[in-house]
Length: 151
Image (tube, rainbow, N blue to C red; front, side, top):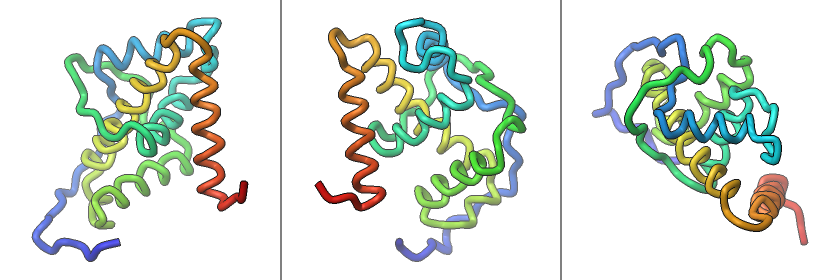
């Protein structure tokens, strides 16, 4: 990790009440949780957001929100653990714990990674064939790296 940049100043802001997604991302979430053949069928949107956030961080990267503003869920619905995952990703991304003062920035980072992740997950879902076997392989590989498993 690099040293913090003393030239960067973060505002003291409070995040909005809701976690916001653009129109296209909202369609992706709706499709993935409402289609019976989706592996995310019946999953709560907050849980899919957290999965998309992690998948986006690892595989897709940040994607800027497009047009439209849709509340996906109320921010106070996040568990303490989920909040700390979001804060940890923002701190890692900015390489500066002072980013935590700027809650709007923290949640913007999370929403952009989740945007990248949900798009990638939706693309896997609509791809012909058993494309979710690719997701399973990805998750196994990520788990091996995370837990330092040997082949």
